[in-house]
Image 1 (cartoon, rainbow, N blue to C red):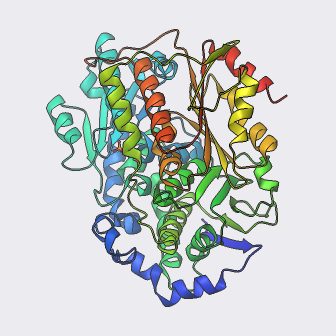
Image 2 (cartoon, protein in one colour; image 1 turned 30 degrees about the horizontal axis):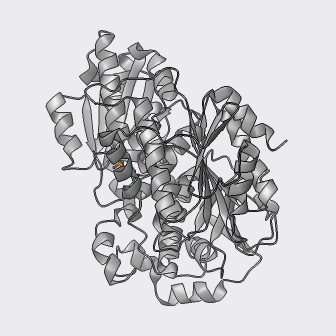
Image 3 (cartoon, protein in one colour; image 1 turned 135 degrees about the vertical axis):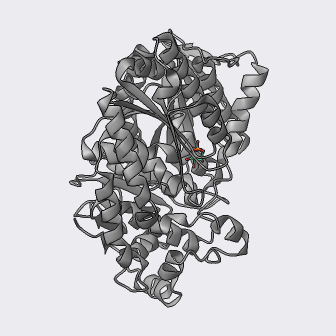
Length: 526
Ligand SMILES: O=P(O)(O)OC[C@H]1O[C@H](O)[C@H](O)[C@@H](O)[C@@H]1O
């Protein structure tokens, strides 16, 4: 095991850290002092600090998870599917990828993703449906669809559904009414993105075969250093680099040489939802190790890397240590960053707006907006004025990039199948190289529960490239008046509408044939 370490380069944060030590911020966080973030944040903070000692309070869960796993295995049930969005799936994804065990993570509404999950061997499948609120449309839709699929296959659906939710949520009651196999109630005093070491992180990971006791041991080993009012506390340095590097409001995150798999995607949600609000915050940009952003010397960047060496001259924090320790390190650092930025790190005020817009579209089912023009396999639409005088895909992309401020960023929002359409990811470094600006890439609707908050609530300086696709095969959602295809289209249109209302440029590309549309898009950058 190794305790978390943070080394800083290309800057001096000693004064900030001294102030944090003098104000006893670390020990006050550990003592669950809800007053740290000011009077406006106090009531939320008072029910959101349960994560500081989960390495102790989650212990009783281990035996329960182990017992269920043994039962499932004895029945030959070893294909674990996890339905969960944002904080209900990002941590288990990192934990199981790092442990090298199989977990099918379902955090999409793309019909092709759903179909693939349903096409797996249902005779060996258990679905863990995780939702803190119990009201998330994606997870509700997955649950309905899997329940029917089990029944259609002659399998007792209730025996194959495991629920993780908060006590008192509507989902707890539904689970009891339906007689689902087991309901794990999570600690309600922990928000989704801080829930890696609650039942949300531990249940699916443990059932899939990851060593979750070790994860808690790692966090327990890390905790004393992270709670100390000391200039040796690594979380104070990481928090200071993230929030107190003047004018540097974009953090490039990558993992190079770390044995932790996929950590930047988890950190992205933690930082985006915790800080991206009130027109401020830190934009987390999760990138591949060869990303152009890592060589950039731009004045608005910092780097937060799970790596041993800085890659450019910008302010950099290098972090290392075990996964359990890293979870706690980044959580404390984000709470510290929230304090330094003067915001409440525990709410996500702008996430709801996109959900509301999608619901409105599902209810109204309006005629789709006509395309401004079609180029090959791509229908092009955009916010008003953006396409004036433009009649080609190349021209449309250039027009969007023309709106980029010197301090702006590009957000690629792909409402597609992350496995089938994985080639599209190449557009991220291509755009970063072309614009010399940071580029976020999110699969929709997954990113709505992560960077989606920052895009609407953070610094208003993004330009948005939304990509959707045709669905040759759609999937019904039992007892709902819409299909997965309609749902994902409404989520995309709703989100684009909210971003446009906030005055940001949005270019919407709809691929009438996804495979050739993806290649057509990529060819723009060759
Ligand atoms: O666990 P749930 O209640 O289903 O919520 C899943 C996700 O939903 C919202 O988008 C929140 O912004 C996220 O922080 C949360 O993780």
